[in-house]
Every structure is written in structure tokens, then in C-alpha cells.
Image 1 (cartoon, rainbow, N blue to C red):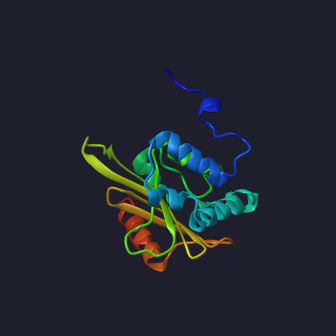
Image 2 (cartoon, rainbow, N blue to C red):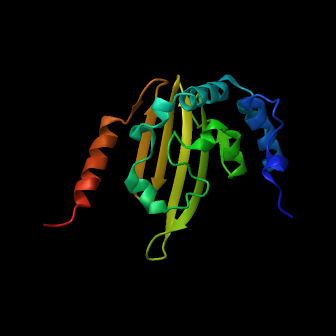
Length: 185
């Protein structure tokens, strides 16, 4: 028996944080004390506020910089499944939807603040070989970072609440990858 979106969606009177807790508990059945603390904590609240700010600004949503690099998304194919296409992905306007897609929440080892939503899995490449797929959205010190890795291809996109950027080392790696994929003349 499949459930409709109305059966799955959190009650409309819940805040985004309450909705995330509701969906997490319904999809995971149990949550550790640490997970419950993260679900109700200021770091997740900050992540949600940054996503809300972004998704309320049409100008920012339309920016190409808000999307993952094409080289990464091309490796996944047109059906992204649980992965998001960038920080402008419509599902991020309701971040509880990530938990429905199998994402989880944690605070990486060694962090004293911040939170990370993540999804890990595998896909097949053109030769039928398994390829690792990882995507995460981190919020730390007032900044969102979307990280995606498909096999050996990676992308890291940052949003500081007003602008998008990629670190210089990531930009150099992307340029080298693009150059390596140019057709020979």
C-alpha cells in the first residue's frame, strides 16, 4: 500500500524544524539522543533559515552558481533520485523531504558545532561498475556547503546567505577536468 503526499507530509501548522523532526521519526522509527538534539538544535535551525532565505529570493534561485556542476549531474543521469541538483533544488524549500528520500543527519566527528544532512549510495557507470555516490549539505558558522561526489567527480558549492562561491582549489580541479574532457582537435 503506498501513501499519498498528504499522508506523508507533516501537519501544516508545524515549523520547518518541527516538520523535520516529525518526518525523521516517522521514517526512521527511532532516533538517538544525539540525533534528537541535532533535530532540535540551533545548527539545524540555522541551516533551515539559510535555505528559507535562499528559496525566498528568485534572483538567487535562478543563478547558475546555485546548481551543481554539469559534469557531476551528468554522471548521475536525468533521474536524480534522492540527490538534489543544487542549492536551488525545489525540495530544499521543504527540507523535511530529504528525510523521505533517505537522507540522514549527524554532526561529523571532531565538530563542536554545525550539522550535516547526508545521503550515501551507489550507482552504475556506463560499464555496469558500481560507483560511490555521496551528497551532503553542511551548515557551519553561518554558511551552507553542498558537497556531491559521483565516483571520482566532485563538486563543493558554498552559500554564505548572500552569494554562492566555490573554493579556488575546487575551481582549479573543475577547470582541469573540463580541459581533460575537451574533444581532441
